[in-house]
Structure formats: structure tokens, C-alpha cells
Length: 425
Image (cartoon, rainbow, N blue to C red; front, side, top):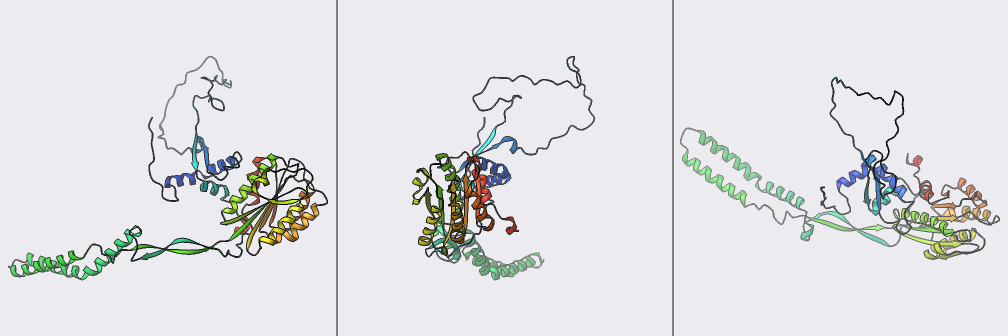
């Protein structure tokens, strides 16, 4: 058995050319593996990379074979057991039962899967590649200006680590050409005269000696021009560029009444984490506000938001009221890009659902870029869903989806943030 180890160094923030070519070639299979893997991942490792498994059959390459060609005669032996049209039974399985999952191959050959790892950035790129934030506009830029270092041409002075060798050699060649061009032209003329005198049958010893001395003197002058001078050195120049940052806030609203069990909260948590990661690809600074509610709403931290449980009924409008209050107090909609996501099992007091509709249409949606509502339940939809449907019909920045199991989370997320092909066209 031979082991091949690729010891080529990867450049900074880039993978090898072969890796990028592999990702492009098998992009469809990799994206399918990524979408399948997200449903099995734990909440705590959602931000890490992923081990991708591609069936070996999907990695097959076209192969050219040399055909036999020509006219061939072949004699097949007969048999005394079967007649035309008979069905031949499958041969019994050979060998013992292995320790792996699945059945053994009936042909004596196995089919391996190809497994490789992708980084966090590659994983997120594949996860959100064809998605977009609807109604994306960057509000007033943050007063806090950040700076990034960018290339700013070349300069004649700098530290040795910033020397640009190619640019310096180009300057050296240009300087030597400029300083020696007239001498080289004169040298060429003298060499032609010397060659003409040499070919002449008459004696021109004195003239040849003088020409040889002049040629030697010119060569020495040309040789004295240094190969590289301090004037030739060029250093890469860097400058700090101001990068204004836009701000975004993400409101997470969730029902924590007795009907919301821990499994339902885990599904909501997965959705919220996907939304946060998706927003972080567009906005550098993101605030997250957690609001839980039953009959009353309260702003809490992340742990209490996902793991506390209350008893009693549900008044969803209390969370919307608190969200509107926090926006008015801390997040001016002219300076912040506001996003909201509400998760519920659909339970709500029937008299409160019209108030939720009114709050969304008059207070929340005019201030938010996008508001999504997910209902996690196996039951039939109730009054809250019905009133929210009316909101979705008349407000393009509001969307709602139904989740029944963990496997629905990623497809629902993609449906909420799919690209608008009409606008793109």
C-alpha cells in the first residue's frame, strides 16, 4: 500500500487550486450533503465546519477504452437446466456479516464513500450561496468608523519586508536601458566598422587598434552601470482606509408557555442561529434582543430565552408591544437595520390575534426590514396563523412558514430568504 501526502502550502485565506477545482466540479453533490447534514448537526456546533460525504458513484469520471473492433466469432456453451425466458435466482450471499451498517454487497465488491472536510467559511458559503436578504438597504452609517489596511501603490522608501522584487527589477532594467542606450548604439557602430576593416584585404592595423580600444572603453563604461541601485527599489505601500459600518438588530420573539416543550424550542433555536449567521454575512455589527412571552413579555438573556418554561396561557401581542417599545427607546429605525423573527406553536387567545395583526401593520413592519413568523406545530392552524396570513398578503417584508420537524428547518429558511429572480432579471 502506498501513501501519498500533499505537502504543498496553502496561501493565506485561500485553498489550493485542486481543492477549489474539486468544489466547483462536485458543487451539486456537496450542496446536497450540506443541506442533509444541517438537520443532524447539534446546535452548539452549527458555526463550525463540516465533514462532507460524497458517494463514490458520483465521483466517476468518463474513461476512454480501446474497442476490440472487427468481426468476431464467439461460441457460447449451452446448458441442460434453463430454457429461454427462465428467471435465474440470485446467488446466495458470500462471507460473514460485517460490523458496519447496511447489508453486504451481493457482488463481492463494496462501494466506498469519499469523505472530506470543509471549513466554516466554505460551509456557510454553500449554505447561504443562493439566498438574499429582502428589502436590503443600509441605513445611516454608524458614527464609529473602522479602518482596514489596503494596498496603496508603491513608494521609494520602506522596510525591507515590503520590497517588491518584480517592481524593483523592472525599474533596474529601465534605468540601465536609459543610461546605456546611447553607448550601446555607439558600440554597435564601432563593432560594425571593426568588422568591415577586418574583412578588408588592406592593412588597417592602426585603425583596428584604435577601434578596439574605443570598443573596450565603451564596454567598461557600460559594465560600470550597477545592476540595481537604491533608486530602483520599490516598496509596497499600505494605507488605512475608513470603512463605515452599518448596524443591524435582530429581535427574537418566542412563546414560552406550557405548550412549548423543549424539543420545539430546540427547533426554534436552530432557526434563530441560522438567521443570525445569515445576517452576520451582511452586517458586521449585530445586536440580538431576546423577548420571551406567555401572558406577559420580558427581555431576557439567551440562556433564559431558550431554556425557561412558564405555565399559563399565551398573549402574543405582549411580545410585539415590548419589541416596539425597545425599538423606540434604543434602536432608531433611521440608524438601525431592524429584523424580527417570531416562533410559536400557534396558541394564542382568540381575542388577542386581531391586536397582533394591528401591531404588525401599524407599528412593527413600517420600521423593520424583514419580519418572519414560523409556527412549529403538528396541529391545525389557529386564529394567529389566519390573521398573520392577512398581514403577509399586504406586506412584502413579512413572511410566514410552517415547521413540523427538524428536517423542515433548513428548507423553510431557504423559502423565507430565497432570491427574488424577478428583481434580479
